Image (cartoon, rainbow, N blue to C red; front, side):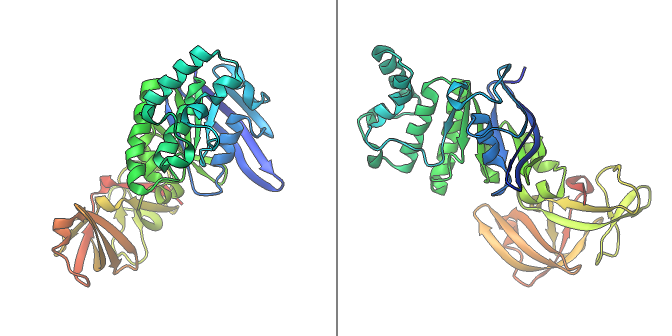
Length: 355
């Protein structure tokens, strides 16, 4: 039995449907991400799980119990807010102990739990500091410790790393995953950051306009997107729109501006004549100065964006397409801006999408 089960849940605010017939399940001990652009409904869904909003329809079950109409304080759930919401008049230990004190836990057990949480987030030396004396990363740890202190079955996190700078986000991401693995509590976190979701979550639900566009692990979401929206939102992608036509021994994609129809990576259920798109990730493109065998598109180098060991080469294709290729910086150094190149890829490295 999943720890969390959401069945056909919908929520509207006036004429706006924020969550539209969403169904998903989160397993025990899972680190699950709700990923999507602003306004897609992910935070509303998180608030429905927490009980801060009630659904217009559908059911929410936690650990086998229907909590659809149960108030937040009676759910085995805790929530860590994006702002951290620490009490400025309490020190670190006092913030962590607050919920335990409200529950009536005796002083000795409370002190032991606070000490345990401080050690968990490596903040034992900061127990007597006030929030204004802490860095952003330290505040995030305190908020996490406070949220875990009551030992919830499910912890909800709303953009947990959004307030941190890039370097600190990367460090804290690893710490958060490590803490989740040690405590074994199921985490559901909301993010609009694709890199954050891909790097942290055991599974990801990509949301679009209140609905689930795709659920899967990071590799499935990135390598095998099921829609144009998922392919375009999760990472960079090169998209070729066209119509399916009969090829040499299978369907191929006829694309305006490209003389030869592009071969498909696999068979498709779409019929001949259907509109479709071919998605190719930038790291799958190869660049050569001379025309290679197989698929090849003539292009001109527009810009080379150096990123350390890798560089992104921006291309203006003769077909009118604007493409990106991610290659080793050493190889990119062999191309000058304005140079004529050929972009190619293996058919198996592309994905067919229904337009």
